[in-house]
Length: 72
Image 1: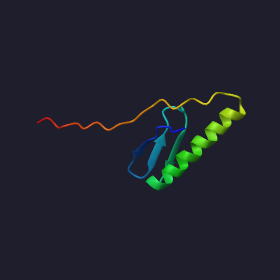
Image 2 (image 1 turned 60 degrees about the vertical axis):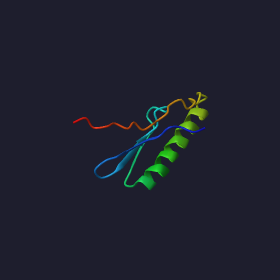
Image 3 (image 1 turned 30 degrees about the horizontal axis):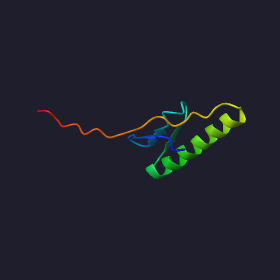
Image 4 (image 1 turned 90 degrees about the vertical axis):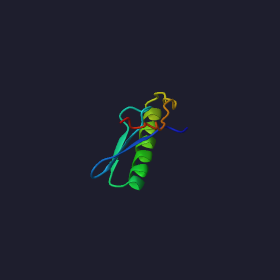
């Protein structure tokens, strides 16, 4: 399974969240670190769902880039 992850760069850190897994978030100091942190958070969340006998939501979100031209 491949989930969409949204990465956001702040002034002093990076944040990440997974739209298809509400509550799964991570914060780290670098892009490299945030990727490892969010991967661990997703694995932990899915493990908890399975142990509780709850369904694991299938990936359904997609992300894209929108090119916006500046209007003068």
